[in-house]
Every structure is written in structure tokens, then in C-alpha cells.
Image (cartoon, rainbow, N blue to C red; front, side, top):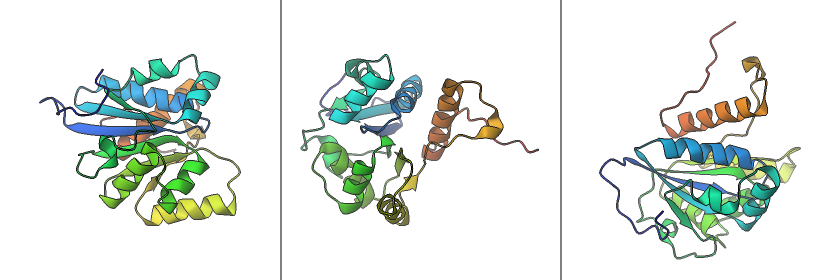
Length: 199
């Protein structure tokens, strides 16, 4: 796995996706997303893990942080603010923050880029690239709602992990898998989402 991000697209790669994982609950969603992206020969996956994310991964899954990192083509140290995603000159097709904590939401909306994930999100917005946030919090306070509304007004896609009960899921894994397919659809990647077929 290439670690420093200073790599050229292989000829077969056509999409470069940056995945950020914060410390909010929902690590299984992020892991399933990374697995699906890894299956796509035309996608190059870049990964950012916060310290909180590493703790949540150990709490919610059987994966170690290192195992999660191995699912990406490139992984960055969250504290190395000078890495490639910190610059708008580094091409990136989209960024997905999943799950996205309210602390991360607040940092993004205020432009407070004190780590590489926040800086990368700031760059994604200023370069008018797709930024998708999967906020994981309930109930939402007026502060949370205001921050999310402001980001939505900037063009950021807010995709909360909502259960579609009409799909009649029998396990949380089924729901997780279909929600990840929904994220792929939002990004514009080939997906296997179960869509509504009417009553």
C-alpha cells in the first residue's frame, strides 16, 4: 500500500475518492464503504482516520485500525497537515466523511482546519468538489441543525444513515450494505442499491 499519497493514477484508475472517518458511532458503515470501493478497479481510495475513529473502530467492530487502513490505496496521518489532500492542486473526485461527528461538522462549517481531515474538507468545498457527510447524532440540537443547514447551503450533501423500513431488513448488516450502496449512488459510482419499486 502506498502511504504518502505522492502517486500517479494508474491507467485503469478513473476516480480518486477520499474517505474520512471521524469518531462518531457508525464505523461498520465506513468499513463496508471501503470494502466496496476496494472492489472497484477504477477507483483509487484515500483514507483519513481521526484518533477518535480508531477508538470507535475497536469498540464497534472486530477490525483493528491497521486492518481498516489496509482497505485503502493510500492512508494519511491525520496530524500531517502538509500531505497531498491539504492542497487544491491535488486532484480528488469526491470526499466522503462517514461517520461524521458533530465536532467534525462544526470544524468544517467554521473553516477550523486543525487536522488533515478538516483541511481536506475545506479544500473540497473551496474547489467546488463533491463533499458528502454522514452525520451520526441523535437528537440533533439547534446548533447541529444550524451547522448542517449552512453546509447544505454551500452545496455539501448531507446523507444521514436513515433506515428505509420498506426494505424489510432482517439484519443490521443488510441495512448497512444497502446504505453504502446509496452513498455510492450519491457519489456517482456504480452501485447495487435496492430502489423503491412502488406499492
